[in-house]
Length: 234
Image 1 (cartoon, helix red, strand yellow):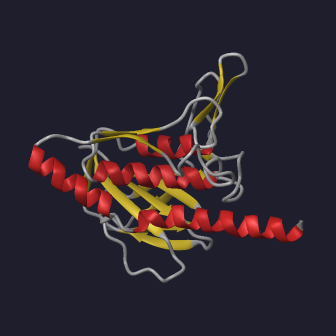
Image 2 (spheres, rainbow, N blue to C red; image 1 turned 180 degrees about the horizontal axis):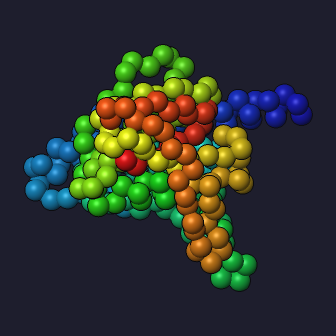
């Protein structure tokens, strides 16, 4: 019995790591094909049905903090590539549904929903070029930057088991506010928050800026814990 549990845990961890590392290189085959198709046809493209894992999701992956990091990172990749929008498949109580439940028992936000809420912060913004310095083999950090005409916006995803220190450049003003997407552990079902807030059964959600970092000539440093994402505005 112990051997079977250990094997299952290793299998889940492998799926989880594969899912999180997919976001490291935006030049995937999918994006290249869509880019060429939209150019040739002169039409926009929307990802109409997708999610973290096929066939309803994977236990301890699609229903945990891992799915929140994946969802935020993936949706921002799509937006940066010029997709018109994206639909994450859901409904009922499937493992990968962002919102689970029914009219009789009520509804609850799953972790993936919080990644979607982070990505939503980029609505109405124009993406600008962002680069990351060389990462070590054990690091897995992705970054997105945009501007909405008034504010600079940055999202940083640390999808690995060790904290990282990121120096951010090209911001404006003397400080940047930070909201965190985080949870107790990468395999946590509960306790995932964005901006220190959870999405209530009645749709109540009150995220707040949780930290301020000082900027000097548009640059500052942010420490990002393991398996955590940060949204910055300045």
